[in-house]
Image 1 (tube, rainbow over the protein chains, first blue to last red):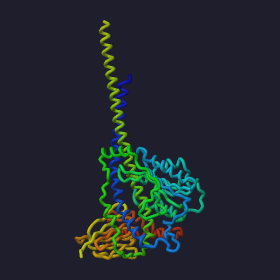
Image 2: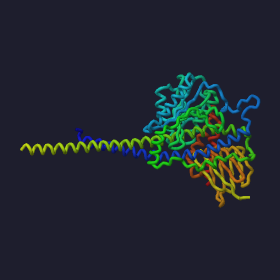
Image 3: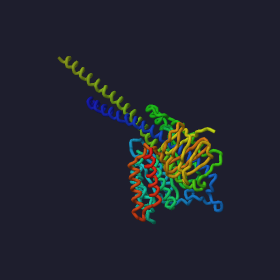
Length: 359
Length: 135
């Protein structure tokens, strides 16, 4: 027969745990709401930028009329021999399978590109830890984003690769206080390497986040740019029905809206699309050249913002199920305890009765 | 002709300004542009500088912007900027330090200095100080 005192202690400890998971869920929900707002706030800019680029594509001569070669290096398609993969995960754990799923998708991608030289930039501590255990670090590292200003200087030529797959950069701790400048620095770095032909294509693995119940794990190609305004998704994984259900329950109980409000999108969509002949202060080619790097930066920025939102959503869902599991556990432990107490009382009565009968 | 136009200043992080204005000055790449209602449609790249605009009741507002571009339509002006700061948001100390650092680098005679970048940084810092100081 289990000891009543022991069971009571266990119940108390589970109650404490439940308190913590509950608090974490509320905190994640609040952070998720903020992250959602930020992804929405970034949308008008991205939308307008894309529109202007699209209208410029029509006006500027981007392709050389004679050779058909693109005039801008970021549009140039080269045989894919050296690939850069940016893996965006979370900095913290306790978010269910969030980071594990991303690293899994990254591994699958690496397998599909086996035999090519692949550089990896790891964003987020969890993914960095996973990748570092498997792949060697490159001799020359992209330094942390805070000090990229210096790291943009030309790197020494022909550094020997550490392996077919190597980690060229680690960016830990930038997701907490994410600003556009970080995405821009990373984009500048990537563009430099692309223009120097150190890499032939750039992919981004991250958790796309439209709303709590509309998420996808995707691999998106960001360089070379195939078509402005079209996203080149190479690999995508939808949420399973069960995950959706869980996320929905968690969101409802935490008071987070399932659909972020779409208030700013329509207006932004009109930017730069008026059917008028604009005066271009600069030649369209020049504008186009100035805008393309920004386009890459905003794409990376959006991926980072969405990944942050998705991480909070994953943590909220995980903490929601942890809380309900704790409740179940408390219920069953209480039942066991009551049974034990009853058994003890019964035993004592039998002892008293049989003692009285013996006299 | 209406005497105001709609002015929006958008950064990747938020919409900074969304208001009606009677007049605006925009730091175009080839020099400052003055915009009044009914301006011909125009698209331009911006350089580092300050945007000044007058809202309806003759109130003047200033913002420090760094890189962006603007679309001007007869009844609407949209500015996309990488950063746009109101005078109250500017970190004067940081700007001052950035300015000193850039000046030091330019006068150091070191051949490794990326002059364009440093000049850019200097310009940015000066604009910030300018906008923060005047209002």
